[in-house]
Amino acid sequence: MHTPSNKLITKTGKERQSHLEVTEPAELMKFLIGAIPSKSRNDIKSLLAHHQISVGNEVITQYNYPLEIGQQVVVNWTKVLIEKQPEGLNIVFEDLHIIIIEKQAGLLSIATATEKEQTAYSILSEHVKKRDPKNKIFVLHRLDRETSGVMMFAKSEKVQQLLQNAWKEVVLERSYVAVVEGLVTKEQGTITSWLTESKAFIMYSSRTPNAGQKAVTHYQVLQKNKNYSLLEVKLETGRKNQIRVHMKEIGHSVIGDKKYGATKHPIGRLGLHARVLAFKHPITGEDIRYETDIPKEFLNLFSQ
Image (cartoon, rainbow, N blue to C red; front, top):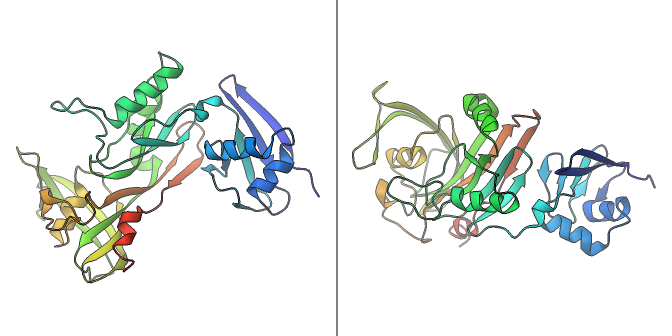
């Protein structure tokens, strides 16, 4: 049996990592027990549970994850990841430059002029300040209050600027899953229109070129029945309420979306979830992809 190369790389006091090379196929748990003999099985379970193990830039928590020869397993020894997860969101990836969270439906991304309640931003801000009062986070994009899913924040103004200035080039994929009303007969399609916002903060769609901000949405049907359709939706542009407006436009409003024409409210929340965020890391240049599960309440509508 080959011994995995257990090279400890210390970049800064804040970021201590072990990079382990996979030399033969194995399940992750068995590999880690062999590679880190100083740690007990429970210690390793704890590392997995606290998102401290990643394989090829993806955080892995499942102990029986199959490893292949040549892969790199990174153990993040920093204690920051063994904190209690903040209420209302899960931190799914974090390094010195960015934080990726999974936001629950019902939580505002950032405060508005009229609403000053708890937001993903304020919860996360408080969370990083517990480590060091000088720590800050910076907004990169937002999700509607009723939309759940993946969001990214920067940990410095420099990283925020780098990402915002090259957002189109840096973000490789942003895809959502949406449950919409009715049976979508066209298996895939692209919706292009120009969006404008009314004084009542409702977005309107027009097919007249340049009558507002151009918005392009691609969709594909994943599952359907006579009442609902589950779509994968990819954004080419990220306009406010874009998916919701475009779904209304094709006659299939997102479930629970009264603002944009929905009449059905079967799961007590909006049927929209930001599922995938893939991007080029602004500092390391690595490709990072984070994918979340499709919410169970979405899938339950198709299991009958």
